[in-house]
Length: 421
Image (cartoon, rainbow, N blue to C red; front, top):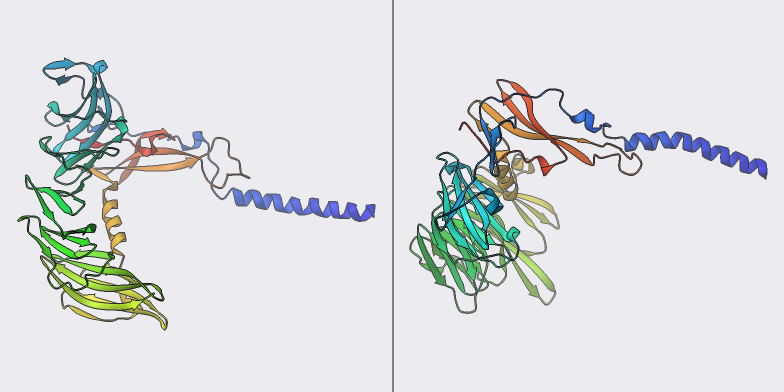
């Protein structure tokens, strides 16, 4: 018996001798690195451009740092750096403006600094928040909207730091438009003018979709077309699907028209069902292109330029459809026709990812990172890095080099803007 136990013990030890290295290798699926391994051996030198970050300016390599906003003037009184607190800020690169939320004494104000002209000044006073972090900036290509995420208070500025409108709380910023729906009313500010329209009694808006100077409101009772220019609102012409609980399940703008896959949810004696229809909206008119029917099976929209595709699951299998916005032809297509197409959400994400690099003259700046661990635990967490070194990179004339780095700090936040001045 003792001999048998000894054999079992020896076999277990032998198995562990094979298993432990295997586990170690599996855990070491990433290259072991320490802090010393990720620190650059050489760094690029300043090229003469200026890096802006918060209330500071320096050369791109971080040298010659200086403060931008040193003195603020409130009610004709000058306050030095130790007399005001910067709680938050937002850069608007196109107009070279920085919007600051400042606390001066017991007052909260919006202040601006233009880093091209070096001019600055108070924009307006704002209500004292429960927490200064509740104030958030939303910036479009034409407007700046400041709102208190807790109270809902909102105030609108131009991108040149001019106060435009106060009182449209919890609004949504969309280019040159600020809007919101409240109860049975749709409200908006555009082109220097505030407007509002009332919906049918008892209705409310579940979703708002914009196309140029029209806003389409998917309401509980009906679907409305609102002219943002004239303020006129009416049920959408040609839309006869005014059932309750209609939602968009795919939206694509192309050629000055809005193409929508709309979904209706409704209850029957046999349970909840879904139905989907493909529509085109243009100005105050709607046109039904295809009805996918009432069933539990899905239809998914994908787009590729002027072509719109659908993947439709059915009991017999999967069918594919295509619509050409130029010829206005809707027909069955082969699966391969969808190659290269993406969902509308993926398309929007791709457009948002275009600004990862900043080009200034002949130079391109971007941020990369490399993971490391000072004391890796290969059994518990060594298959991934717990720390990161971030690098501000510069590309010029085919050469790429590091000009700044930081260790596990600020998530790679190096700059708000880089300029020649």
